[in-house]
Image (cartoon, rainbow, N blue to C red; front, side, top):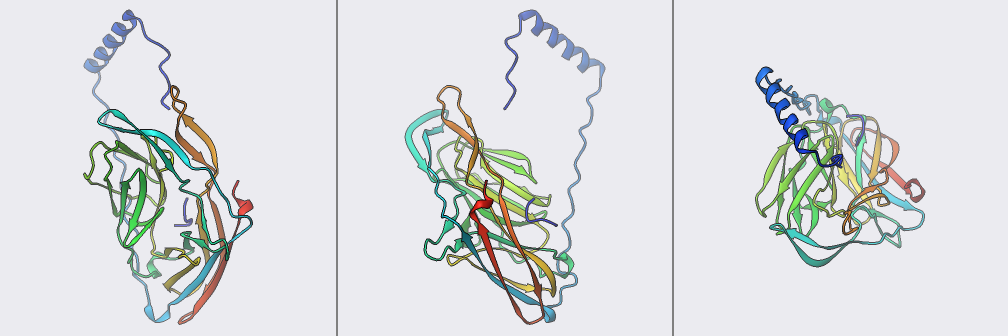
Length: 304
């Protein structure tokens, strides 16, 4: 894997009765005279073998930090009039923070919860996959990405692995997956888990298709395990790295809203489009038995 990431059209109008009859007749004729075409089956990519040539005697590590450069950003919260359950709108004013707003220590400018990975890794030489499975949880009208004991906006999934998704809310949810995966899952009832495999390498963006624009998360489908998040001090560690020269990359989503989709009757914001994410990277070289330092500085002006 080279990178860390990678409306319905309205009907023209009501048809006349004659037009409807003609359309139905045409469908019937086609259905009788032509055999249905077979839908092509998309082959599922086999997961890349990991660790076939891993040599623990030669590995080193990368210890680093992510710092913010520039003014600490702010953003207004999202608001909604209520939520839908059993087809009914429950009036309950809802206020939620911008999910992509970076968490920055005001004193040190350390960035907490940023995604960090390596580029240039040969999966055959990498360490075996040892990251916990990912579970997506919809709770309290928020989107949670759980991986082991970590609850963050990011999850790291080995290519071909299955991801569990569940809602614990009374509210109706529709989870949209876009990017390296493209499908939607409805959750009309709580506590009914669903599973889906993610077989394509790249970035999968998670969002709400039920009108909760603040719900956002990100899954990185990858062929090596060198992925992590910064801690509360902006620090990260990547261990068991084979010797070689790599790029260490920090990926952060953009919190700036560049477009809104509104309900035509209520004018409430149903969906937002954020600006493009930002990558910051540096070159590192890893030697056997040594820890290489890596300092990544994220400039605020890079977010447009």
